[in-house]
Every structure is written in C-alpha cells, then in structure tokens.
Image (tube, rainbow, N blue to C red; front, side, top):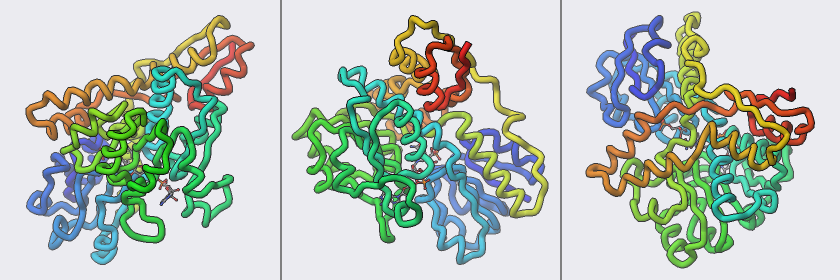
Length: 380
Ligand SMILES: NC(=O)C1=CN([C@@H]2O[C@H](COP(=O)(O)OP(=O)(O)OC[C@H]3O[C@@H](n4cnc5c(N)ncnc54)[C@H](O)[C@@H]3O)[C@@H](O)[C@H]2O)C=CC1
Ligand SMILES: O=C(O)C(=O)[C@H](O)COP(=O)(O)O
C-alpha cells in the first residue's frame, strides 16, 4: 500500500512502516498529480483536501494530524466513501500551555495580577476546557461561552455572548465554521470589537478568520491600549505585517506545537489507519519520544508562589521566544517562506507534565496550583 504524507508529521515514516511505503512531501505543495497510486493520504492543516485534490485518485483513507478540520471537505470524503480520521485533542494541552505563558508574560509586562482579572473562554472543548482547568487552578475567575456545548450538556454556568465580552481577557477556542447554527467565521466582528473594553486582552489560537482582521486593525488604530495576542492569521503564510506590528505578541501558528502533541497526532492517525485496514498496531509513540531536556525543578520554602509559577512555566514554554523570531519576518525577503520555516524547523518543546517539581511540604498551596497547571509535583 502506498502512503503519501506531509513531511511535517513527525515520525510518520517510522510509525507507518508496517503498513506500506511512505512518501513524504511539503503539504502546501501537494497536488493531485503527486498522489499517484497512493491509497492513504496523511495531511496537516496546510493541505486543502477536496474534490480538486482527490478526484479520480486511488485514495481510500485520509488522515489529518490536527484538531482543526476546516481544510477538509468532509462531505466529499463521505460521498466518495473515503475513510477519515483526525486527531481531536492531540495538541490541546500545548495550546492551553501557550495561553498560560501568554497571560503570565502580559501580566508581568503590564503590571497586573491575573487573580484580579476575569477571563472569557469562547469555545470550551478540548483546548478551552484545559485553559479553564489551568486558570481555575490559579484562582482566576472564568466565564465560559459555548452554546453548542451548552445545548448538549449542562457542565458549567455558561454565559451568553454579551456577558463573555465583558471579560478583561478573552481567549478564542472555537473551530472555524462558515455555516451551521453557530458559525464562527468573523465571530469577532466589527460590532463585537466595539463592545470590548479598550483595555481588553484578546487571544486567538483558533484560526485567523475567526477575527475580522480589517476591523481589528481599525480598532487597534483607535484603541492602541488593546492587547492582542495572535497565533493564527488570515491567509497564512502570507500574513499581514501591519497586524503583526500592532499585535502585542505574535507567533507563527505554533500554539499546539509541543513535540508531545504532534507525536500524539501521529499516533492517533496510526491507530485509526490500523483500525480502518484491520491491521494490528505495532508502533507506539513512547518508543520514539526522546527524553525531555528539562525533567526536574526544585524550589525551597524561600520562593514566592508567583515567581515559582512563572519560572516553571517559562522554563517549559516562553512565548516571547516565538514572538521574537516571528518579528524578524519584516526583514525576510520571502515572508511566506520565513513563516513556514519557523513552523517546519520549530525547536523541541515539551509539555508541562514532562517536568517534576520538588517543593517543601509547607508549599502545599503552590503544589496545588502547579499540579493544576499540569506539572508533576513532589512534596519533599
Ligand atoms: N493554534 C494552534 O496551534 C491550534 C489551533 N487549534 C484550533 O483550535 C480550535 C479548537 O480546538 P479544540 O478545543 O480542540 O476543539 P473542540 O472541537 O474540542 O472544541 C471546540 C469548542 O468550540 C465550541 N463552539 C463551536 N462553535 C461555537 C460558537 N459559535 N461559539 C462558541 N463556541 C463554539 C464547540 O461546542 C466546542 O466545545 C480547533 O478547531 C483549531 O482550529 C487547535 C489546536 C492547535
Ligand atoms: O491541530 C490544529 O488544528 C492546529 O492548528 C495545528 O497546530 C496545526 O498544525 P499544522 O497542521 O498547521 O502543522
């Protein structure tokens, strides 16, 4: 069986070796002519999978190593009887850790305490619920807006859109949907932006088109004190450099880019393909993940709780590094290639739970907070 895969799916050749011959290529360049006799197609978010790509091909199964599905024409796959799997939740922990790093950096820079702020979470699925859990562990008040979920289950005290927009900090965790009962395309529209406080902190790790970027730029021109943190952009990799200039923190769509999350995506696709073709899985990601570069931190009882949290989070993931590298895009001769290369050659980043934190027994309150953030904690 021939398998064609995006070259940025980590360990794909190793993982799928028992299922067939794996050929990898750049996902953005993948076209119908490249498919040849391949029966399995494995993509990331940069490949549009639709009739144009798949018509008259031999593809029997498509997998995407992502959470988002906006690049996949599911109706077409269904119509053609092509099997499909995505990797729900694979990198949700990394995306939530990104939000925590962003908030700690902004709170420090702007000199406020997160405990005094209210965070509005728009979309409380795999990513949003992890953000909620981490913020709750830090005793930060959260408002949850998620009408589709509210219809299905009564998990939280959900709020309506008007209420969530009153939060000091708003973080977006919705899928990109143009149609349906709850579309999210330009959910943050000109009229919504007008309702936000002039000093709001707005974080987007969902998809660029959830925000009307033109309206956002207009708003930023009038209210430069607005804080905007953007990981996702309209027309990636050809992003608007003016918006990057105006963003307080800007990163190249890497919120979910922990090695753990990416490899989890590979593993989920491997399991789905094995299941679909009735093969026994032989590869497990644990066999291939390297040891994390940081495995242990120890604090004495002299540490202030906030400093400990800041130190631990930044030791694992410091958003300022990704912001600083993306800002070099302005000098790049080919900005789109620069953007994509930051993603392709992304340095190894591991999730908080790779780190064990040693604390003295009297630091039980701090232990609770660090555990809630996802670290392993040992009271010694
Ligand atoms: N920047 C990055 O690296 C990453 C980005 N993402 C993006 O984040 C999105 C969310 O990821 P997950 O939480 O894993 O997805 P999910 O499907 O688990 O959760 C999405 C939540 O949004 C809610 N929702 C849908 N429409 C809504 C609306 N109009 N208003 C309010 N809530 C609405 C759903 O009910 C659901 O609870 C993905 O679809 C993807 O586009 C995901 C992972 C990494
Ligand atoms: O999983 C998703 O959805 C994401 O946004 C991924 O982090 C996107 O990664 P790429 O597929 O664009 O590498």
